[in-house]
Length: 103
Image (cartoon, rainbow, N blue to C red; front, side, top):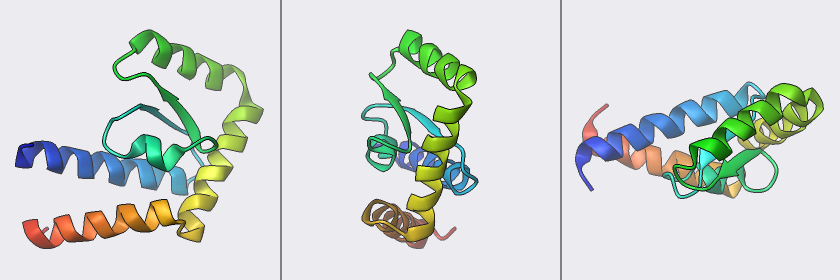
């Protein structure tokens, strides 16, 4: 994997963690650099990799279901706040990457 792809994945992970910290549900593709592992079963919606129709359906589902949006967002916010194993792992990976790349 190229250094550029790692940088992009780390930036995406940062955006995802920040969004979750504000209580926003996460939408992601399965197998897309750790987002699915963070989301799990309760902090957002994962759809099959590059299935844009499924992603569009997920967006519409969240748009039309504020109670689902709130529940998923609250779970993600709590996951970031409590520093679950998934979040700690993501932060450790980010720290190592930042140290190597001097950001």
